Image 1 (tube, rainbow, N blue to C red):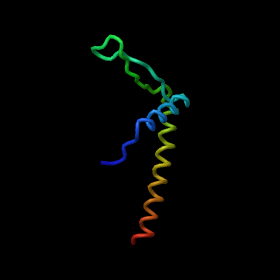
Image 2 (image 1 turned 45 degrees about the vertical axis):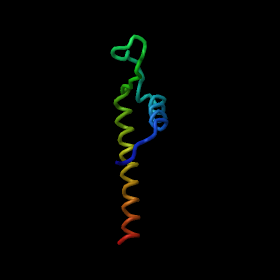
Image 3 (image 1 turned 180 degrees about the horizontal axis):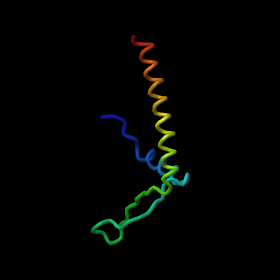
Image 4 (image 1 turned 90 degrees about the vertical axis):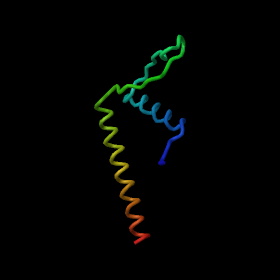
Length: 76
């Protein structure tokens, strides 16, 4: 139960983080397979990642407060 993003949304977010230099992409061989590879993502720049995390946290907190205020104004 809850929000489950669609695959295109996930890949769009990963590509955005790649372009910003926060992540890097690598490939590893799938266990038991001779040719199949799996894409893996690593944090490239921990400082950028932490700054991005703070930004997202701020946006989420702000959104939460807006929703909370709207509920209080309309249902109390």
